[in-house]
Image (cartoon, rainbow, N blue to C red; front, side, top):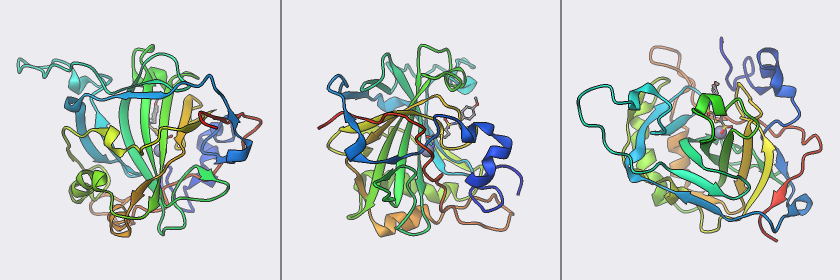
Length: 275
Ligand SMILES: COc1ccc(CNS(=O)(=O)c2ccc(S(N)(=O)=O)s2)cc1
Ligand SMILES: [Zn+2]
């Protein structure tokens, strides 16, 4: 079992061996205790602007699946041939909230459990949700995602809890693509998806300084966790759980419980954008 994962032999409790940041001062996720969060009236409203042309594809990366957006950090989106390049008017960007400047959406992905009583990374008063959505953005004051990921103010991830309820039609396009990316390394095209459609009605949020929740666990993330969950049905959850951690030809292992448990707060402040 080479490489990090979520099994007993390579899961979160083993990561510190290869990634010493695992025991750092600003690790994520955390347990959020709303009563202990500090309302900060100076926090601005989140603003998300989306360009429908820049969804790139959907990939099973062996840890989760992610929907990638053109953010010009990878060479494939550069002008490499005489074929006219679709003009990107603007990127999908995050501004306002606790961040200053413009952060560009790179990808979104999910974490989920093998059953409905677990799966989220952040918890609320110790309660786990069955699933959590992460929209990963990077600070455009840096030249690329990779550079930004090494800076304390380089990344901003919007976290959204999913709770069991009615089927969520907004997820359907993502779910319909999963059959094509069942195993590790598989990817397929995915176009014109507006990630704003995945957000709940309220953009009230908690925010704190943290890290990536997977190796390399870099402490470069301003976390913005929305208070209001979105819904997912049991059948839709089952679709997530039908993906495989493993690649073609390997003994199949279902992609479930791909979440890191809450980490020590170590004196950090959690601020709330709402009373
Ligand atoms: C410098 O080398 C690097 C830099 C960054 C990565 C992580 N890549 S990533 O941004 O897709 C994320 C991983 C985990 C995420 S979570 N669950 O916290 O939202 S986001 C890999 C290599
Ligand atoms: Zn994540």
